[in-house]
Amino acid sequence: MGWLDGQVALVTGGGSGIGRAVVARFVEEGARVGVMERVAARGDELRREFGNAVVAIAGDVAQLADNKRAVAETVRAFGRLDAFIGNAGIFDVYASVEEMPEEQLSRAFDELFAVNVKGLMFGARAALPELRKTKGAMVFTASVAGLNSGGGGAIYTASKHAVVGLVRELAVELAPDIRVNGVAPGGTLTDLRGLQSLGNDDRSQFAAPDMAERLRAGNPLHIALEPADLAGAYLFLASRRDARGITGTIVQVDAGGLLRMPRPRSPHGGR
Ligand code: NAD
Image 1 (cartoon, protein in one colour):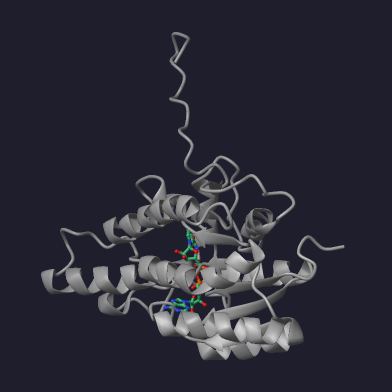
Image 2 (cartoon, rainbow, N blue to C red):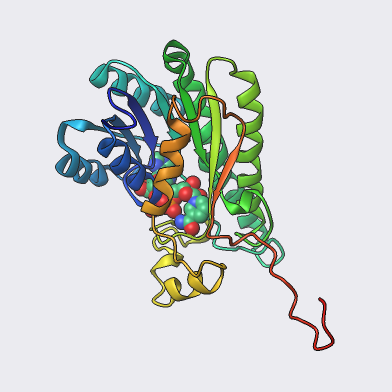
């Protein structure tokens, strides 16, 4: 028996990286999954891999109408919605506010917040009538950049702090029917893209050949996280049985990367 037998989820950005790993794990655990994805070709790949367990919807999370269509098509295909996984996101590739050309600052902010923050707000709004019917759950992809400095530039970090705020406020607003939680990944080997407005949306920083090694050096577990390492946190938070009492929380999956390290020992003893 699977954790999600008979249940239906909608995953945004489920065509790649963390979202795709969530889709694979949810299907493995008995769910049927709607996937809303900006890159339409990724929908075809999903159909080839998962067959009838997945319905792919091409769309942009920054458009409310696309989110509503994704919910409607998922419910038309599978009859209900139990979990909304708001995951699609883009990155500022550590763009510096001081060094960014002035004319790009506003465009970069608008582009990134439209996807990372407004996209979640719209997704939540579109999904909530169906989730009220099933007393379902929302899980949003936040980031370690939503909990501390150092996980991105100021625009990305602000957007992920906003995601954490959205989780907490919606958890209260939508209770008692709908649980709302977040997952905060640390650096994970995916295809996460930059911004069109900064000219770096055509590649991922994780494509750099030494990236796995750098990720391993940055956390106490010495792990270069892979998307599959994240999927269990979403599964747990979506589970009615195991997460019944959990709302408004952020589960960190960062190989300990946000922990403070001990200072080097003093030769005179103590720290
Ligand atoms: P990814 O690029 O591999 O996957 C993201 C998917 O979202 C892609 O398929 C992309 O086409 C899709 N997408 C992007 N914009 C979209 C839009 N407007 N509408 C619909 N689909 C859209 O990257 P990923 O790392 O798996 O990213 C998933 C989430 O994880 C993001 O929210 C990201 O901020 C977050 N995250 C990633 C890391 C990391 O190190 N990779 C760390 C913390 C948080």
